[in-house]
Image 1 (cartoon, rainbow, N blue to C red):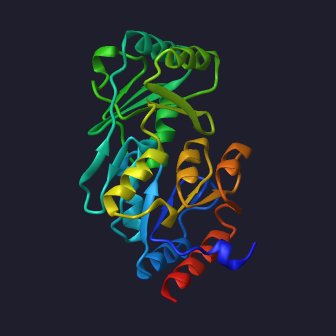
Image 2: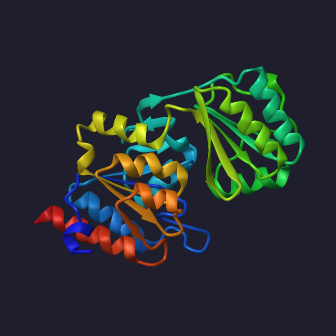
Length: 275
């Protein structure tokens, strides 16, 4: 693969976080931060696109030191660099879905219901605690069981944490509701949201807002939730332990966090933009 293939001329670079910029053994490093700032210095817009909630993305953007557009909750919420909302797609669980979610929790799972202004968590305390520690954000409500009356009426996303028999029933319930989708987002987690609210759709919305053509975008990700984003971008990069499905949607594959490969590529992209 030649350098010209690896270092395209772009106007926007969009990054998934977990498994792409960082992982369990490699926190956000000064080397990575410098590479991201180098893109900004070269006049290239930088954005984050993650399953994480907005408040967690804001903390990471602050650590990087850049005001940037953010795609949160796997594409259901898109905000501009100044914090204004570009798009938000919400849904309200019906009775059948609420019953399936309650069963998922009752047999050992945990769900995280994310509204634009709050996070409600239901299920095992340890699972909730791990999510809170991983994102650096505290739930607005914790409960052992699902109570339909306590669930926010308009949700951006529900993260379902746990691999067990309850997942199959939940997936079947969602399959009967074509306006919704549930997909794997890493480890034992599955994300439930509107079918139209994908990272790929969010990227298209963001590019329209910024006036940037999709073929001038480089996108980086490793999970199934990144597939539409990698496919829509002019230059898609599957990262690290990305599955064959993710690699098939991308143009290239790069070694994951800690390898230094991403940072080298970003330096080459910044150089390409300057010459």
